[in-house]
Image (cartoon, rainbow, N blue to C red; front, side):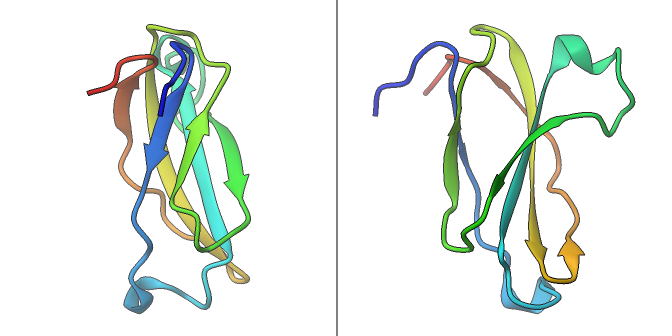
Length: 96
C-alpha cells in the first residue's frame, strides 16, 4: 500500500472473548496531534467509529504530515465502550 505523508495506518487485534461484556459491535479509534494535546484536557481526542466487529485496521487521513500523533483504540458492545488501549505515538507519513 502507498500512503500519503498525511496518513497513518492503524492496526489492532480483536478483543479476546473472555474480556468482552457482550458481542463486540465495533471499534473506536482515538487520535490527537501531540502539539495540540497540551492545550486540551487529557481525554480530548478526535475519533473515528468503525461499526464492524471484523475490521481491525483503518487509515487516518487528513493529518499534519510529519506531526507526532497519539493513537488508542477501544471496542464497544451494546453495553457501551470498553477501556481504551494504551496510547502509542506515531509520526504521520513515517512508515517502516
